[in-house]
Amino acid sequence: MDTVLLPIEESRVVELVLQLSPQGKRAILMALVPDLNEFEALVDYGDERIHVLAAERGLDWGSLSESERESLIDDLLHGNS
Image 1: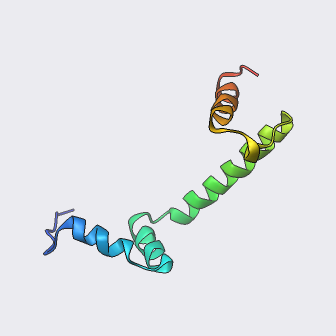
Image 2: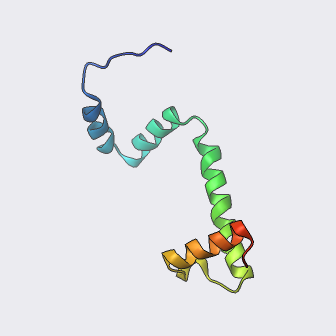
């Protein structure tokens, strides 16, 4: 794909995008990340799973501190639980 030079600075484009409505920003994301819906579904699935995995260990994911969350994830990844 050939590079096309814009007549305005990229930083100005970013400024303009930040002024868009949420719907406009989503349209930009959909153009940049065609599989955004699948990505969002994967993120939602991961969010559900971490809540379940925490609950299985008697923990409430929502009430854990950042360090407690990191520790739980470390335990899950490395089998330290």
